Image (cartoon, rainbow, N blue to C red):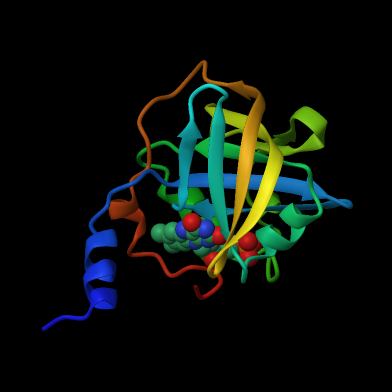
Amino acid sequence: MTGAGEIFNELTGEIDYSMLIVTTAAEGKQAGCLVGFATQCSINPPRFLVCLSEKNRTLRVAEASDALVVHLVAADDDALVELFGSVTGDDEDKFARCRWHAGPRGLPVLDECPRWFAGEILERMSLGDHRGFVLEPFAGDCDRGGGSFSFRRAKRLEPGKPA
Ligand SMILES: Cc1cc2nc3c(=O)[nH]c(=O)nc-3n(C[C@H](O)[C@H](O)[C@H](O)COP(=O)(O)O)c2cc1C
């Protein structure tokens, strides 16, 4: 007999959601990490939920910020996914290892990800070992690119901060 927790882990491991890179900035610091726990949660008004691990540096910077940038990642951009998913900003400056520019409100926008939106943080909530951020989009771009990096391809990676 398998316990509910094991069944849950088995089933959630099979859900092949899109991997996103979420960046933010506050108090002269920049941060960003790979995120799988994220979803649109309303159409009208438009709302999006991002869940950040309490272990991550990105959460600490996001707590001092009023906005996040959500990037879609090309289906084969393994190098960028590895940089933002397997390296922590506590050890290395990820932004020194990729191309980016200052977007709206000075938030870091990744040049390799031409599909992104910036969202105002409307609500923050505790969700177990992650914090939820409800976003209202206020800027973005979707002129180029297509496809999306899948969890199936990312789950072999060791997270930069243990979950
Ligand atoms: C497949 C995969 C999915 C991940 N999903 C999330 C997530 O939903 N939320 C999150 O905060 N971290 C997630 N992470 C972990 C962070 O991306 C990772 O620990 C990162 O190195 C943290 O960087 P930071 O300390 O600079 O914020 C995921 C990592 C991997 C490999």
